[in-house]
Length: 278
Image (cartoon, rainbow, N blue to C red; front, side, top):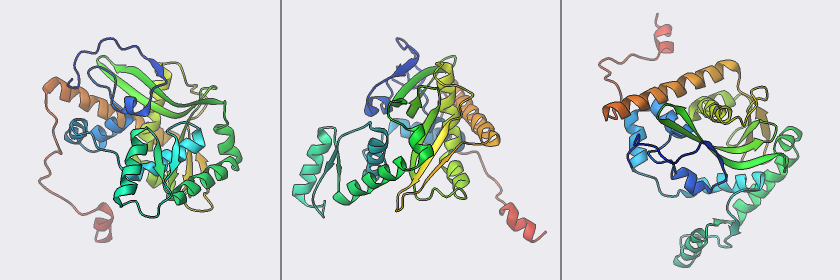
């Protein structure tokens, strides 16, 4: 069904559904995810539409993050160690494919040991351990709500606490506080936070007085952890960009067009270079 087709039979709410069902978008006529609204706002409608029409196959690079989420949040596919140094042989390829076909996640022993160590390190961090304490919330909860008339949104919280506080866990190359501003900007985490928060507020599931938190953890020993919240300016930029994305989506639906970049007849040097020669 094309995006923007009539939406019927959808009830706003929070649902415990498998990840593949969520990512396939169960909303008739389609809904906007955080990733989609980011593409619309910071890339182009053409980029958004291409990804919509060309779902990408599984990428092994995502397995590590999925495994880390499984051990940290206790939710996700069962982890299965494939005890083989090489995964490019016919026998091992068949074993890996069979494991995936069962809905499980195959891992090399080294990767399994690594995510186990990461989970242990996170449990040793008082702030992160308290936020993600077992029983204090629900993992991988899928939200669906009407953003504006005719535009539906969806979000999948890593961890939504019973006290109304959202938490997102990120495994990352660096959790150093000096590196986080660039990561937040480059990956659009400020947009993600505001999109998720709007969904939670629309469904009366989050408490505005309890800040959304990111838990960043490094993937290399000693697996350091930083827990942080975004400041008001970052949140304001995120809200603005999300509205830009929603507006672009509505325009594209109304006109049946999904344009690429705007014309760029002239290109300047970066401002910092011009300042050097001013």
